[in-house]
Image 1: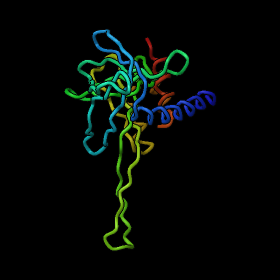
Image 2: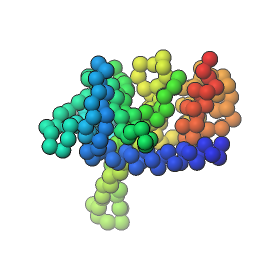
Image 3: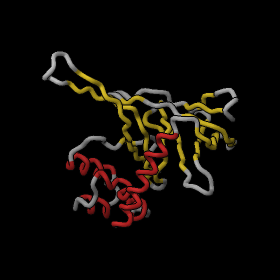
Length: 208
């Protein structure tokens, strides 16, 4: 268990580091829905997170630094892969979050239940009541997690800010089709920081 949590910490650091790289021109392999693939430079948009998530679901592509920029999206793209055989590869896929919207996200775990992550630019307004009419807005990156089962057509967002009770209620309902895992959830074996472990356990224990 301790070893696994260490791996999760290392993965999180790698993920955050990799995440920031995707907003600059980065070498990658683009795989289309028709099976065709090609390499080049890609640049993901920085999406803004608000009550309603907005932002482009398309990304920019060019063959090299001097090539013309193209925009690619979920209508033609199956997957974007960063890295190569000598390094950890990172896979981004379009995931359906509603009837008419798919979002480009990093695939963290693939299985009976898959786990995806997406970064958004979030704002927060801070008001100092000791000064008259003084307020400031800060911007920071926020990582959202999504779950999707093989039997589902759209992903479910994991609640971002919840109490311990609310998180337990959410995962108990989402994983209710696995009695063994529900028992562990009842015993409060998983915290929100152990989401990766929870998904891995579901794929291992509930594969029948």
